[in-house]
Picture 1: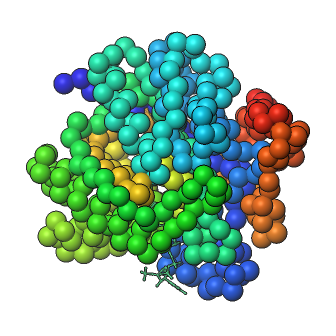
Picture 2: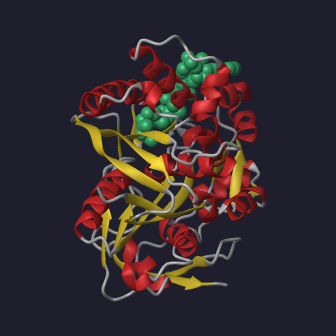
Length: 391
Ligand code: CAA
């Protein structure tokens, strides 16, 4: 069977972050609640001149570096932080990157799940058109109300991947387990700029859907828990992922994993998320980037189990095998430089970024210049967003 999957992979996040110890101090909360209780250290905070488009363009620029862009005939943009009800955010990225005119662009939404449906649709497309490639971008800004329980699980990030036949990084297995249920655990009506969330309920659903999707996947593949060397999970907060992995162990009849075994199977995949916070639909794939960048193991021919969860809800369990030679495709130093060089925000600076409002009446809104990557949102004029390439 033709192998299909990830050929190149890159990640981007904002140049600013808030240390959760600072947030804890202002909120009068024990910082251990965030660092131990949730397992989270920092959250990425976008400056007003970064949005899902600029983050996506930065991630994608690196992902297409050695790709013949004429072969990219589809750009799928997965997000739940949409900037327009009609126009796909991916069209701005298509323009900023100078992609071929002969490329369809569309935006997909289903909370944190949409990048996974984009992946599955792309794999089917490539099986049918093995000479074509798909650029899949997941880009999100996780945003909750100030001083709400969700506040500490904000964050931002984008992952871009080129999907192809005979991929150089990960070949996906064709089987999956998938579940949809109409539940109200997290949602954002059109008039709200931050999500409504039933936090505890959402965490329970996350675990229930893991169980359901795993059983379906296991029935279809007969693969056991031990047949997967590593696991990557959608990561709203790292502690929930650790709990989920222990839960998966238990439902497979095994003893609770030791800290060592837990770290070996999921530890590296959690690290970037601890530093950037939730990035909604990008977060599962940020986990994969983190595993690739931080493990000292040779991942060649290792099977990874993936759990995708999008509130509302749709969940899916699937798997893939890392391809020998993947090391040549890593962008580790670029990712680590980006994280290491972020500016730590003070609490008042965080509130200023959080509260920045774009003009909504069509008047010219010039956006102050902050530190960004290669692209920035310059202004909104006549209700049109204007982006520029800055390097
Ligand atoms: N030291 C150490 N641990 C402490 C502590 C301290 N001083 N104080 C509290 N804790 C522990 C608590 O005991 C708790 O641990 P357990 O769950 O193991 O009992 C943990 O810290 C969290 O504390 P709370 O139970 O008080 O939780 P919270 O009210 O802060 O809510 C949350 C946590 C539900 C994740 C909240 O951040 C939230 O609502 N986030 C947004 C929704 C979310 O992320 N849901 C996850 C599933 S939904 C999904 O996956 C989609 C998505 O991306 C949104």
